[in-house]
Image 1: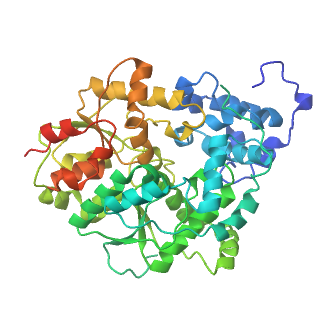
Image 2: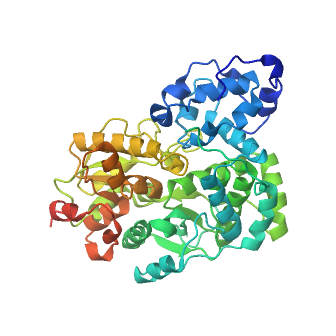
Image 3: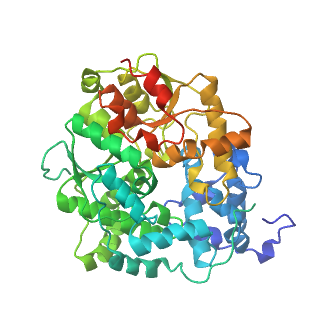
Length: 173
Length: 299
């Protein structure tokens, strides 16, 4: 992430306004920088770089390209603690989801996330369930799995539009 | 908005993806327990992922996937029963949004229309533990216990999405949840408190940086051992993997042995209901559970 002097002349000052029209993040600009999101974040305890408040500040400054290409975007485990405890109702988890959606449109998506999404759109299941697992179900006395309809799902892939050329992101390690 | 149901105690079982992929032991125990408690399950004919793993990619696609599943349940006129808190949280949240926000419902229905489906909003989504507490009830549960876990000390781990975000997940207090404790204590076991018990296990970011989930889960395992737990009880397939599958690697990272067995809640319950251990898939567990079988189930 950015550590040098921030040049606001190069920032996208409209970014925060655009984001605050997205679902669940209408309170974005009510952030008063109290830092509860970061203090209560379980991932931040063990990550040297993931700080929800830092991402929020980058968004409010308008550092759009820096924030969308940041590997840290992908370190949130979606536990919603920040969202539940924010005294201003900012819903950081939802902001992060929106930033990830925008990052994907820019071509940033980690392999692990892309694999799950591809599996879903191709097979209906997030994981590839092998023949041996299906056999094991039988030995455990479990019924066969319900079928998905990948043809119907293929159209969703178009909406997602995520399969285009992806840039490398590595979680800011 | 209750639809007409086949029976009040019949649910459409929504398995999700992770349970059939890696955690069939949870499904085996849940089916056995529910059948013993006269809760009937109908299996889905058609299925797709709840949408949760798509949310980071496209919020809209997540909404469509979830709505699709809700429509499948509406077609069967059955409420959904989930085993995975991730599926539960996603389907419940989308169900709430589609019911309350007309413009979103219209947009999603426009998509579903092409497949001859329409979201109506007349079914509910319940996690297994909700059904056990709300439908069966802990009193009835206690009456059915034949092998109480006398002297067994366990700790609980929730699974974030069944508690949070609290604006949608209202069935328990997200800061001070009690449902799992009530259910555990109904089996005769003692449920101990430990530091940071509501904290996330970190499993969803395994593919990004596995060291963080190892440290989160390891920190929790330390606290669980400190209070003298004989076992950990989970209700989420991801949390289960974070503590069971990963435990030996966490032990290496921390340089200490935890050897803490991890049981799905329905396994703990099944044993107390008198279901034989060999009817469950206990051999699937990485951390041996034999200690529990010897010490725990009062017989």
